[in-house]
Image (cartoon, rainbow, N blue to C red; front, top):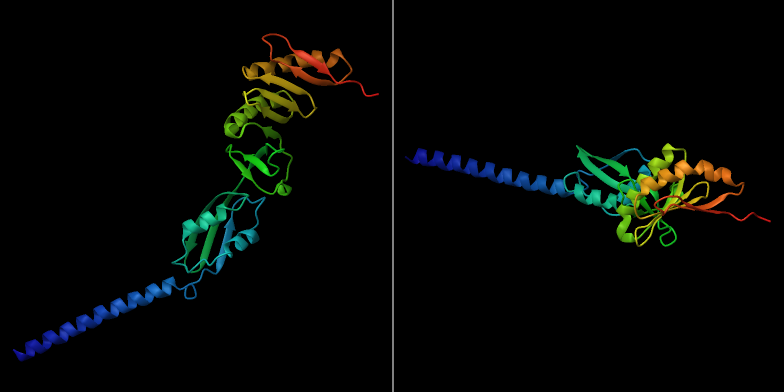
Length: 243
């Protein structure tokens, strides 16, 4: 009986030792995992089609505050930190054992300047969203869009409709303005202003395209503007000859 009791206490003591050892190991692993010095993120890979943001700028942005260890670094916080960069549209972040942080960037793709007189650094992207960034990094000229701040989507929609038809017929668009009453005015790269009004934009643009050869040949003087806000016909103003 005493031998059995001794065996029981021996087994129980061994069980307790194993459990306590496991707990101690788990606690040690937890503190190691949470200690950036034990499992630091040492390597950074930046991916994506980058034109406006460099890998060095991404690294500099991440160095503004401690990342933590491989286990403690919060992917969502890193993503939010990088998406705060002006030229960044979206970010995906992934950690790879033992010390690698992979970042995939999607940059802003600028479609046009936005309300440039009031907001010099504002642009609208291809998703129709306004953002502000350093325009000195632009690698190509952009058209100018202007309109009410609450009507960005309507302005972009009008721009895309008009642009497609004009480009199909060999005309380049320089700017488009949407008034508070949603009337559209377009300026071509040639300097001609088209007053299109609120309704039937495509029909009015097509009327301009059809009539422009006759208008162009009617006078040697350059056209200043063409008012297409009529059910039929147009009103034309020519520039005054320079003396």
